[in-house]
Length: 117
Image (cartoon, rainbow, N blue to C red; front, side, top):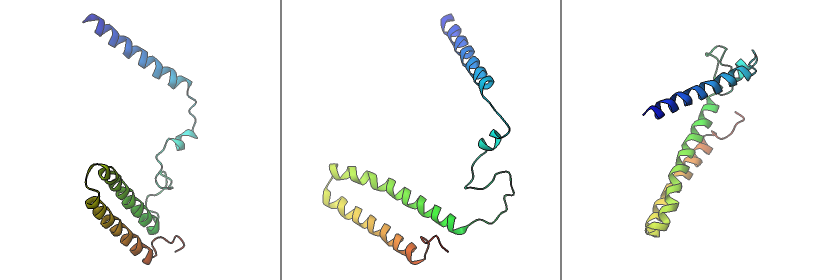
């Protein structure tokens, strides 16, 4: 029981000592303050938050998130081809991909993919 207590105190001491050494040895300057600030989509976090925001950038971001989630839904279908009936899952995956392509076609017709607006 005492061995666990002493070892936990020793671990706390060593970890605190290592954190103190890293704080002492690190070279923090005033210019590092900007590096450690959060990065918000290219905006300066120290300026006004009420500046105009590009709606097109927002739409591209939403499109990326939607297709990113769809890719995460497609990966398990690949593993299901090995386990279950190929014809059932092929029909489901083809239907899913057709829905994706219809969405992409709609975005293309709405000129959401053109960056030069």
